[in-house]
Image 1 (cartoon, rainbow, N blue to C red):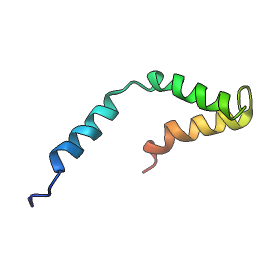
Image 2 (image 1 turned 45 degrees about the vertical axis):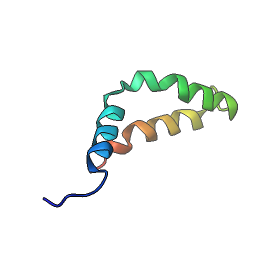
Image 3 (image 1 turned 135 degrees about the vertical axis):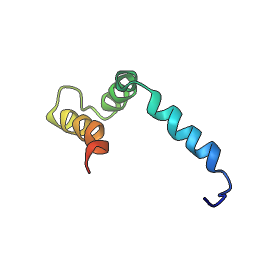
Length: 58
């Protein structure tokens, strides 16, 4: 395995961000949708679904 500078901090950052529960991200999504006036629209549903399922595509 080759030594890459910054490898450990980067992997730690990835681990920490994946430890957040998806429900804790809802507040940020709501604030963004409110700013973009997307509350109660199909676009908000589509964007949220795409954001949560983007990682499951193989």
